[in-house]
Length: 206
Ligand code: TMP
Image (cartoon, rainbow, N blue to C red):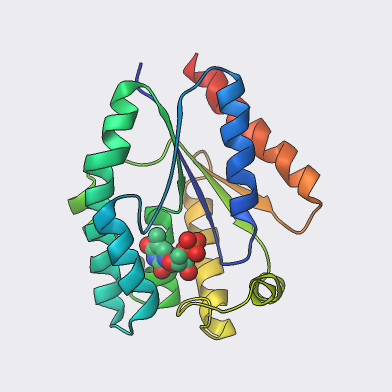
């Protein structure tokens, strides 16, 4: 049976990374083979693109095109073959991030991102997306504690407000796929909600 594709999203500092490992352990304990990956990245070319993407200044359109080039490579070489084998793929960010960061944050709008998504992965979407949500000020405090910020993390607050708003609009449009988890609660509370979502998908897959 084909595997499932779960993506993890949220503004920088919203706390998604902590929970990816919980989902991996949860699925592995239930006999699933789990592939953990990320975007931009996940392949040799994708990681090289990630380096450029995070360090170099470029136009919003170039950001979107680069991230979709990395994405196509990632899908063809890693994600689609894994799903065909029946593995479960956990991906730290995917196309919702491009809608949020380039569509919302960079103000390209959703329509142009949709054209690229339809071209690069027509008819393909995650089975489940966990969107970790936190007000931008609180998220920024968390990121600032980590040390040096990359090009996108250093963007001013308005940018992150637009990114968050775009994520929430995506979630409102696709409530069955995108589950919003408020990170403004204890890690344990968020974790149990995360695992409840994973359990539901597991149930529907069996
Ligand atoms: P990460 O720090 O969560 O690994 O993500 C890297 C950065 O890249 C993060 O600031 C979000 C940004 N990004 C985009 O701007 N567009 C995208 O499509 C993706 C996948 C990430």
